[in-house]
Length: 515
Image (cartoon, rainbow, N blue to C red; front, top):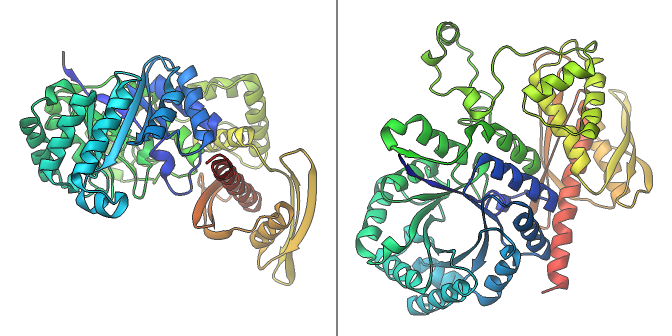
C-alpha cells in the first residue's frame, strides 16, 4: 500500500486572509462540512484570537464537523494558545498550531527579539500548548529565509517540548524547488529527534512556485501539506489543494503516494469557496478552471471525439465536474426534470432552495431560448448567496437613462431590521446612479476600485456576471452577482460587497470593545 500524504486545509484561516474576503460564521461552517465530505485530514478553521466572531466560528466547526482534525492557529503567546484551545476543545480531534518568526529580518523588525529570546519563547509556548492536547503543530515562520542552523535548533527544542507536527513554511513564497529540497534533506539529517514528528510544508505563491515547491517537499520527506481550495490566501495565495491532490493521483506512477481525498467532491468545494469568497476562478486555472476541460482547437476536438485520453490526462468526472452532452433546459421544462438535472450537476437543494432556484430558472427561461449548465450554476450561486447573506437586501431597481437624459436610479432596499428604504440619485451613467442611490440609502460611501462584467454564456441573451471591489479604511471587499440585466447584477454585486464590509466592520468593533 502506498504511503499517505496528509492534507491540511487552511482555506478558512489563510484563505480568509485574502484581501476582500470575509466569511460569515455560517459560510465557514458550510465550507468546513464540504471539506469534511472532501476527505481532508486536518481543517485549520481559523485564528480564534483575531476576533470574538472567529472564536465562535471555530467553536461551531469544532462541534459540528466530527470526522476530521480541527486545528486553530495561535502565535507563540499564552493568551493566543488559551483562546485557541477554547475554540477547539470540543472537537473530536483538536489541534493547536503554534507559530513564531524565525528569519533574522522578521525577528529583528517584527518581533524586536534576538534568536535566544525566540528559542526560549517558542519552547515555552509549545510546552504550554501541549498541556492541553498532545496534537501540537509548530511552524518556524519564514523558515526558507532563516538560518538553517537556527531552524534545526528551534525544531529540535519544540519537538522536545511536545510538538508532533513540524511545519516548514515558505511564508513569503521565496523558495526555489531545488533549494527547498536541500532544506528538507538537511532538516531530516540535522534534527536528531525529527523522527518523533510528522514533517509538513506550507507554500505561498508569490513567485508562482508553490505547487512545484509542495511536490518537491513531498519528495524530500514532507508527509503533510498545507493547502487551500482554489489556492486563495494572503497576497498571491497558497498552494492549491486540487493541484497537489490531482498531481499525486494522476502521476502516482512517479510520486508513489496517495491521499484520503474523495476527488469527486473537488468541484463542489471549489465552487462553494468561489461563491463565498467572491474571488472568481481564472478560466485557465488548473483542475477547476472553466477551460480546464474545454477544447477549442479543431485538432483537439477531433482527437477527443475519437478517444478522450488523446488530449485529457484526467477524467473530469473524477473531479466531480459534470461530463457528457449538456442537457439544454427551456421555459417548457417541468420541475421534475429540472430537479433531476440539478441533482446530476451535484446540487442537493432543500425544498425551499429548489423552489427559489426553480422560480429564478423560469424567469430566466422566459428571457433566453436555451439555458445551459453554466447558466444553472450562476443561478444557484446567485440565489444561494441571496439566501445566506445577512444585512441589506435589494427589492427594486428602476433606471432611466439615454444619450439625452440624465441617468437616474430609484432603489428600494430592506435594511437589516426589515425596514423598507427608498431613495433616488443621478449619476454619470446608470450604474453610477444606482451606486449613488445605494450610498444615500445605506449611509455608506466606500471607494469603487474595480468593476468587471463578463457573460456567463454566449449570445445576446446571456447572463451578465458582475464582480466589483470596493475599498474603505485601506481594506478591499468583493461582491459578485449574475443577471440577464446588467444594471440589476451591478446593484446586487455592490450590495453584496457592502454587506461583506459591514461584517468585517462589526468584527473589528467587537475587537475594540473586547480588547
